[in-house]
Image 1 (tube, helix red, strand yellow):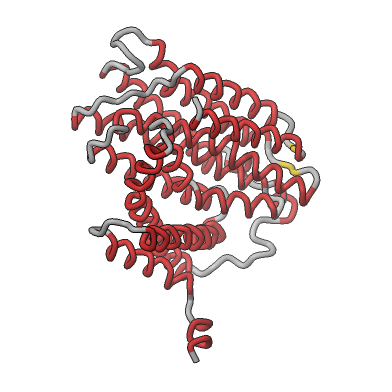
Image 2 (cartoon, one colour):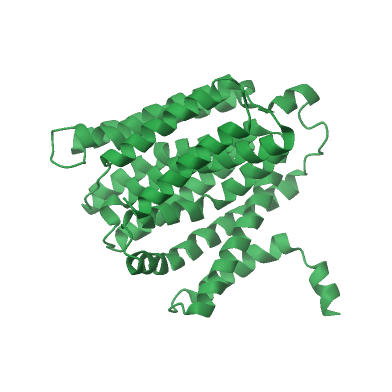
Length: 363
């Protein structure tokens, strides 16, 4: 009887609600080992269900709008997490935005893209994507990362790796403008640049019947519920993350890395699933779009928050991170220049990702 009842449940509906209930029940409690495992399990389940609902929405609205929905939703989550930790007065508050944004770029460009290239090429030998779409995204990413993460280290108006208020305003407005133009190009002017190669050859929506508007709206609501659960549960885990980082005597920047890893789980799984289905352009839309949204939206919002709350904001990267960032952009340019990739490209990006993780812990 119990087995039949469990089989009849719609887990895609139950899990987001259950995750929010767990979040509410544990919000005021200190997490022992058991509750820590429960919260972590609820977080992973909410991520998996969130990916499912994002894919339903993507089927309804078509590419690249579906990937844009998930990228924007995840960016809002990341911004909420950064803002909440800044308000908490954490020791990592002044550098958390920089560390999380940099970690997002490295995770996306090396971890997510590398894993998608590797798994897609293992299954399909050579995977194809559009040079036009990837090139547009990469050029904007290079400009945004340089403006927000590299230049503050070298400016001289104020001491330290920080911008003056005028410089911060200029960088924030530039980020918003560049991201806005990119979204316009991606969704309106040159939408065909961002469509998967397989879609053009086979006809968009030919093999999969799009869901009804009612189903899509239900999935949108459940996606939002899932993402609320993800951000809340990740915030609940944040003190345990900081305690774990301090226990192993790792740099405080590792907190930003862990937060970025948790927040990017939904997009990582969705991108990996697309790559294994030989839809690498969708994977790139998810990955690069997430990095662009993170910088284009998070940096201006965090900058405004730092001015309003008078919280110091350090954006400039140290020398080691700048070298890793430049190397990542160079390798990404080479990888995406040909319109196709093999397992070697994926392996190179994953090695860079491993170097990033290792140097984050052992600087």
